[in-house]
Length: 213
Ligand code: AP5
Ligand code: MG
Image (cartoon, rainbow, N blue to C red; front, side, top):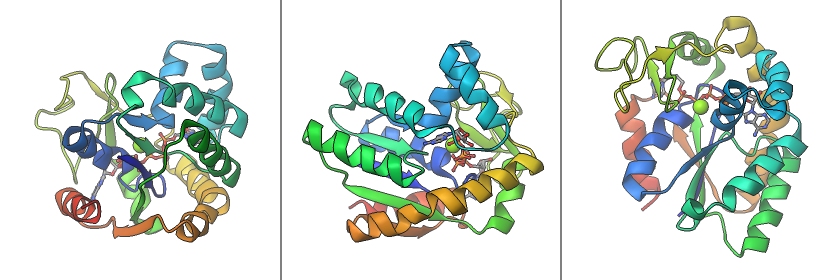
């Protein structure tokens, strides 16, 4: 199964990806997580990307497309994958189509988690992420079992550097101007499925599993 999770920053892509990994035994490919790992490792690509991420802007297409090309070629993607936060521009979507055509594989579905902007700020400012595996929690809506400890790998939970009110505004603007045109792109390809992302986490998971039957 080759899936894509689509939606605004904070819509719940990362949260729902964790359930899909377990259910379908396929990897999550989050360009955000890959970029954050490159920042921790202080690679040249990470240092360059950091400037854009801290400002809430998109990282240039050429960098992102290079990351995805390398990642999809890895052996764990052979049985499928979950794209999370990629593509985010028309150029990235077109590059993905070309890449998948060359690999002779197809996207099965694009699942969009719809959440209005006014709910996004509260979600992002209350988010805590695992410093090791990147899992997302929320102090109020989706708390970890033990305070500040990841349910999955028991590492410490931290606040992402771009999770502040100012940066959220820029990220939402980038989403509406650069990413939302993909709704039309994937609707035309007959792949786009919209879910109500404002429901509780486990309700969204149920709807998503139903949509994938
Ligand atoms: P990225 O890491 O992808 O961030 P994002 O798109 O802004 O998305 P988020 O991770 O913030 O949200 P999410 O949908 O995963 O929500 P989550 O599940 O955590 O990208 C970061 C940056 O990297 C970008 O700004 C850009 O600079 C760069 N970048 C990455 N990919 C790129 C690309 N392709 N091209 C260019 N640049 C790129 O949930 C959010 C919170 O809500 C959590 O606290 C969670 O617990 C809570 N929550 C989840 N579901 C629910 C629910 N149903 N009800 C209540 N709360 C919920
Ligand atoms: Mg995420």
